[in-house]
Length: 320
Image (cartoon, rainbow, N blue to C red):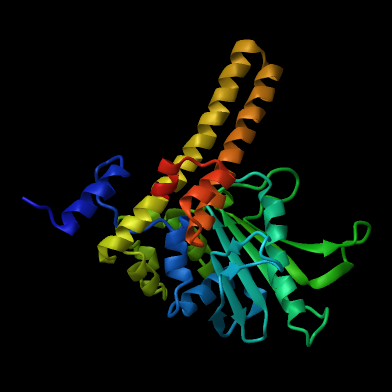
């Protein structure tokens, strides 16, 4: 007997749940889920709440969702697709990226992202080089490396004078990181919109019901949109495919690290570290090739050309 779409989707959902329980809510750390909730026309109020949670001093009243695809000044320039891009009533540009799996040099990637909206402002012509405020927000399920951040969940960076941080080169370009692993409050300890929003970003995918602490808090629409069982069959399949892809990337990175550690125990600590870094770089190159191939495929480039340019095998391209 042919199974219904509901039965099939329930079976697929069980595959990624170790307890064989149905998925109730989508994981907001997966980009397709994040964009569904915060980047879909009609959900601007939820996006406003998210931005208010991260940048309360911005005082956003209204938002207009903008074009997420960005191209350079020539056909050969790299194309970038933002998760969310919006403009406030005062003309400020807010770009938000959700990143589940850690990426090498992610901080430098954020700087690169800023170049697109900056160039678009200059191309407008009327303002010449007078920029309107730009906020590049990165929400990540990992912590930034090095000495770039404090113990704070939210950190903001500007272009400042090295010898006098009170002096800025410009007040119109801001980089904001939201490092989810640093947020350790229990649901019973949430006492603000920012607390509740960040807690949901971390935990929505594991919820089986709406916590009592969220009743009458103005987030009913967020839970409704995140309800996996209310999604169409096609939406469920798209979400699960993206979810699996994120898990695969994280597993590959973890496997590379584990392999490096094992080599370190076998042939010596220093030699193992060197091999581990080599494995990590190789996995990073593979990840970058998959990322570029995905973008090229979305742009309509033939699979043969994509395979030649990126080195990604045809069977993998067909599954993207």
